[in-house]
Length: 105
Image 1: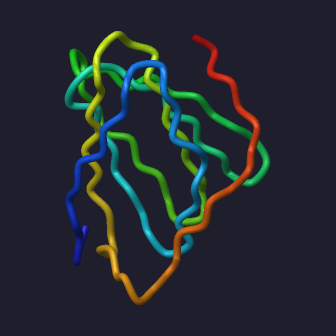
Image 2: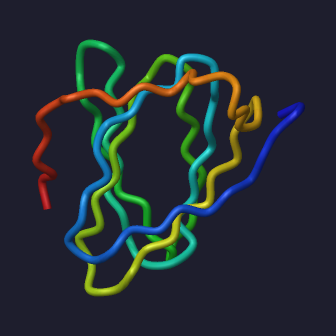
């Protein structure tokens, strides 16, 4: 992945970070602490994936697909995101979406 940025996002137990769509950005997500459920919306369907720091994997989310995070665990979860292109404060390419989703915990 050329011209990338790495950042960490965290999520408190029992909390959800709502759907957001990156119109230009591709992400590769890995849970490095705790456990998270990630919902990925492709414009038609929502796919639910569980990421667990005890069994780390990377999940690729292409641009144009929306994501939402939920922490079902008892501890704060950390998600490492490798994204490209990097954040640009002059390019508001991200938009929040009002999609209904309840994780299948």
